[in-house]
Amino acid sequence: MNRRSVFWNLLLLASVVAACVSLLTTGVGLARYLPVLLAWPLALAVQMGLFGLAWLIAVRHVKVRALVIALYCLTMPFSVVFSYVMLQSEFTSEIRPQESQRGLFDDLRQRSATVATEIDASLAESNELQLRLASWLEMEQAQGWTTSSCDEDGHCYLAGVCERVQRRIDNWEERMHRPYPQGPGQALIYGSLETERSAVQQIADTLRAARQEWSTSEQIFEAHIDNRERLRRFDLALAKVPRRDLQAVRCDAVALPVAPPYELFARDDALSEETPIYAIEDLARIFDRSHTFTRSDYPTVFALLLAIFIDLFVLLVAIGAAVLEEATPDRPLSTMQPTVPEWGEALREEITAWIDGALLHARQGVAERRAFLVGLIDTLRFDRGHRVLFVATDARERRFGFLMANARAATASPAAGDDEASVTFVLEDWVYPALTRYLAVPSSS
Image (tube, rainbow, N blue to C red):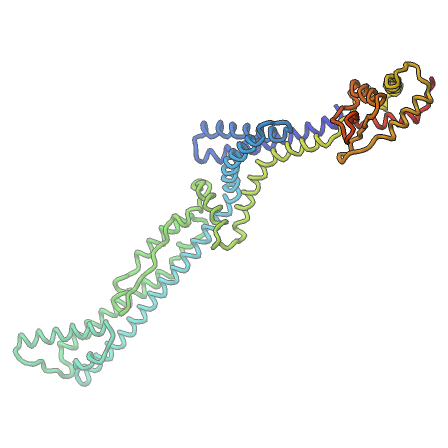
């Protein structure tokens, strides 16, 4: 086996290996959507079609090349898409879960900080209310508490305290049918304010305990737990927060953050829950104009380029083989190679027969043959394709040209120039060196 055969066999082997790799990636990717018994035969049919179409495109004399190219362009995206799904899922099977876990961890940290801030704000309000109510109790003991203190206060909770105390005074006056004697140390007002202060104290104690429990709820942020469990623990901790007490001492509405939906961070268990739609979402995000390209997008781009390259490799090998084959010059048969000693004498006799036939004399002299051949070589020229052309203008030259054509050493072509009697012959690549060698090597005859 010569080197040329080895080279083409290696190219064919590389093309078959690339087709097998494409079959594997397409089959695995397609199996994520379809049953295995349906996915693999379909993938095999697609890859066999791509392999055959690629080599048909490379054939020079295909009459329906446009149709073959169209079929290849329609079939190739099918293989590329499912190869990309498989490759992207494999490349991101470890990266995406880590990104998802870090994303949920950071998100819950922010939400946890918001909850802690709300509890601290309500706790500060409850402490302030305790001080205000304590001052009212001292006022009641010293000089008697009056409703004028409430009229000057704009806090929502203290306004409620004033309303409740005033309501008890109104009820007392209705029962007794006389005004309530406001003064220091009266049991009605003092007892009401003491009750209100105890209620605020209880709220403060509840909020303080909730704040302490929220600070120690680090099981939410433990490592090596999946996102579903982390979200469940956050929901349980959030349910223990005393929302009613938070709102009771605040004039503003209290809105605690809720746990994010699991679907936003579902890739933490990618090996069992990763779906092919994630690969398509990642690819769509890459081409979104509002998206900022980051390092996490590298696996997606690489998977797409690799999927395209695998399917294009077979086509590129086929086209390269066709181009190299077309660029390789045709050579004479092995029986006429100049390197073989026997061939040199055989070719000399063949050229001698052409000359004698052109001169219509079977036994021409050496000088006459050489003179005719020298004149013939002087008329040779080259075209733009570097082919050797012989324009026969008289009967002897035409006979010589047709004798070469009969021996498959030349090909007759339409006449060049204005002379209708001339005939142009395109010489094979080996003919011109043979003619010059005929003149260079002395004849024994």
